[in-house]
Length: 399
Image (cartoon, rainbow, N blue to C red; front, top):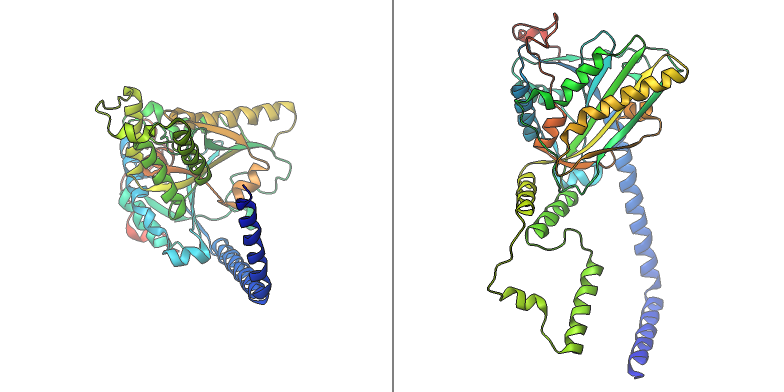
């Protein structure tokens, strides 16, 4: 019985002796590793700082006569096209993947304004071409900031207002990310989130404003591989999330039970069973939708919103809370296998203005198209400012 402790003691002595012999080499390797990590982190910070220094904001004007089905279909084409913006693997190591920001600005007496924030590495011509291919006749204009500080360049609140009453939040899926949201039929106008936002715009009073922001970047690398492995495990009937330690403990327990009981593993007999495993019809339909989501391009998405007013007092607080509830309710229509749940967002106005994306939920191109697309401009919804024909090329200002 003393064989195992003696073996462990001898192994520990050999390890200590080897460490003392190669102590200088280990110190050099540790210093070099720390220096490489510090340099890599510094390069990433400098590169991402340039994203915001050279960023641009463009206003997207939808063409007249854009029906809801064409608006969502164009968004699907757009989000299937833009994953090519992801840089090569070696470049992602130093800089990461840049993200886009699609913002819906709501203000009293104005139409729903759609703005796109482009970081420095993303060329404006590439986005311009993708928007025109998705929605022919779309007008892309430079956005002129209404305030001088950079942090307020994308807000629709009046300039110079420092005492705003603001409330907002962030929206994330409440279930695991491999479960899809409900993507409604684009011909059904009653489930279009932007239609609900336009209804909120018509209810805003003077001094009230709201912003809904959708940050998106292509999902690549380890995040995408882990998601696909999870879907493959679910398809094969294994648990969706299982760590290496849990797998080791499970195998060790099964082997010990075989030694104690003298029976064979249930996994081997399961493979030779003649009766096929029957799946619940609802589970089969869920797996079909999960696999359909896996076949599409994947995006990391963050959804944030806030409502603000220049008024003060308890009534103003209740008013902005009601507007914020209406903003979230516009996207609650997509609840299906998965659903969107809102969470508290401290200082929502500052966070949305910063436009930073650290980690987002994994959504497919179809789900993102249901969230982020141009508003419809049918005869019933179009205002007097809608263009009846596509603008000539010289009217588009390029950066």
